[in-house]
Length: 554
Ligand code: FES
Image (cartoon, rainbow, N blue to C red; front, side, top):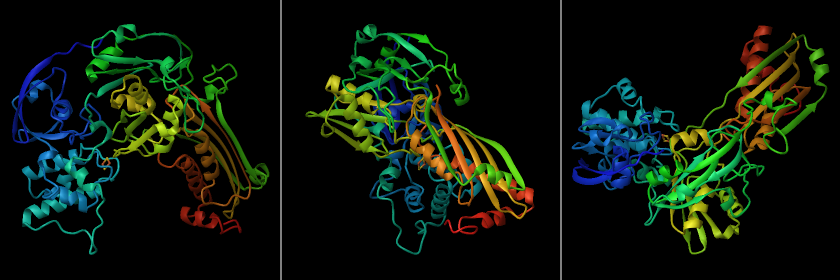
């Protein structure tokens, strides 16, 4: 049962202004800043003090706002990104970040700037090592850090000699059009959006990887004061299935759940706390089924069936020449099996959306990499014509493929349609990790044949891919992996086979590279092993076998 919360008084100074507030007793300093004072420049990334997006200064020292309780925050002097500079007068750090291209998605930028400010306040001439150490606990998923360290270095030099920051190039710098807003902390990400009368959404998720849904009782949640609506699968007015390639994922689970974190019910309430409390009042009766946690088990004849059509999502078989004969004619055959793991995109901005009605059109402002897919999906699942759905992409705090798929958009649209009020949803970090697509894990057995003088004769490859509970981009990705596995090398004979299999793991989808990194790891490792076997330099061996070097097939 969610703990009952009460409002408590707090006084604190923020950016030089004294505040006396009544705030929810469970709030941290981060919520006081963002929700009670509307200072959304400080970002919520991980909620456990790891990522650094909520870095502020507290009594002159760096602090993670999400880890500062009300008791600790009371009476303190807080400085946030909003006090650093203005559009007319950027702080030298902000200017340097923009000029050094240290602002990309920008979600880490306010926290980075406050950490850098804290360093320069203590030490106006830090060494590069000191900069690296000072920013070491602030994560950035876009820049690779070098440009950020360059920017702090540049601003520190400007501090020391009184000169403006050096221009990075002899030509006119081309600043990103949104870099200034991001550096000022005023770029609006979906979680920063507010509207009058706005409700807050929360989603009840399955704790089981595979289970039949016997019953869902929402009556106690509906009776909780402050709850405006509770929805389940029966409330989805259109097709309760969606997906990038196959429509196999429910908006809200109906017959069963197929992965931990499948959405079962959703609530819209007057506050995030009431929404969370309402979730704890929903009773769900599951009949737990055996789950499949790896694709090999999914192929066994007696394996439980995850989807009605069976456990194989897609099966491919490409070949040319005669792979078996090519291996026979080789002087050496290298036979090795490679495994690549799941990989989470770990963008710093969790999924979020705000939906509201504009006359008879539902508008969804959201972080998306594929607004047209999102419009099509919301329209189909809500049984609306596409021109009654408008997707407005917000500034996006990293995605790396992971925000191509629909996540919260249909659910928040459904809640807005039901209540006729604006509804905002913001995933927790745990929800984001548990329910959104990851990079597909591959098992790849490769047999490659090569002659004594270093000529490739054949590739025989077998791939087994875990697509998780749903298809997402699985078929297209699997096809690309199949055609990428030869790399840039010429194999006169090849047989490339594989299966992508449903399991009860988190669904897999797009993640930087779309199937190619997994097979590149396998084939490049084979090239190294063959070169070592022959005693040939690995680069020379690759040049000998590149497309165009050994055939007219370029
Ligand atoms: Fe740092 Fe995107 S710019 S996380």
